[in-house]
Length: 253
Image (cartoon, rainbow, N blue to C red; front, side, top):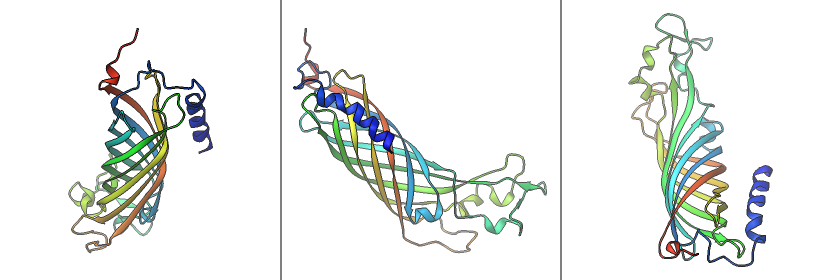
């Protein structure tokens, strides 16, 4: 965390110290579409922490940022994945020693993984810091969308388990989704020469979800529990800006 803050400070310092006025020759003027690729790490909270450990996500999206006011409106989608599953959804298939028997009568190596996604829209604002480049500063957004997660049951390629074929897996995977809200606060740079464009900051998600399977085979019941799934983490991203509009069309010699 300390290294991230130091990196943001070093990148943002030139915007505060270099020059006293936003140059008319700056190339980052006008309305713009911002195409984004990002990566994040999260710590779960609420009901999600009872099922999974820390996770990561790879995301993409697009923003429209206005020439006046630096207002932001956009959409994102992120693929979530993790390697720690705390809830053993296939415990009823295990022997007393904790093993699962495959169709070759040997032990099958079945792994449990976390998989999920978030898709939604957001609005916000880029608050410029310093006169040298008002397109670099504090980025604040709030949004809403769909949060989904499930337990991925990873087969043993050498030993099949009939109880865990593609049809039966749905009775164990705990597919869960619902409405979610997300907030981001961090630093974004859109350089005046368009060469350095990125963002980094803190991300928070609150999901109000439910199990969407009709029946869980291991519990022999339908799970109708209303869940509160939380995620807290850091997201960093690379931005590809596409500027358009009257100001972006000016050419100076």
